[in-house]
Amino acid sequence: MGNVEISLETSDGTILRNPTEGQIAAALNRFGKDLDHCNFTYGDAFLSAYGDARTGIFLTYTDSAGREFSSDDSLGPEEVTRIFLNAAEGKEDWKSTVNFKQEVSGPSQSAATPSSGAGKNINGNKTLKEELLDSVKNQAIRGLGRLAEKGVRGLFRK
Image (tube, rainbow, N blue to C red):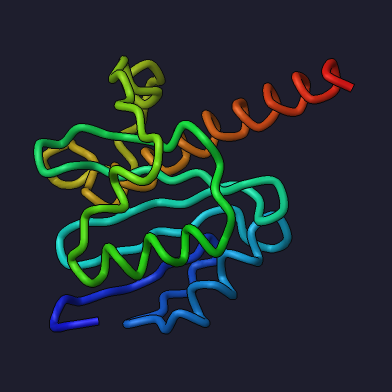
């Protein structure tokens, strides 16, 4: 996977450095069982995946301008594995093979909630890791809402 530092961090805290295709696939297939999300880091960029391996996995990424995008449709574990591997190889065509939509930024939950200052760096701001975790959590909540909406639509189609 080249000279770029690559890692896969799962929601149980496991970090795999330079994961193999098999390790990525195995982690994604655990979604909906004992894992609910993971972050795939390649160089300075990352992709987040969340969902359920049986009903669908959603992806999010942030581009170089700081805009956040999320997949509009769910994907299977095999397709997400392929996307992670392509991203690790520096290929960007995966961005056009998936229907991504730009997320509209609104007031963050943390800004609306009083805080004691815990979880902030010395300047009073959240660290990059905390911001990324908040972003993944927000995306997971949005994704679960989309899964529920699609499930309800499916009930009415029958």
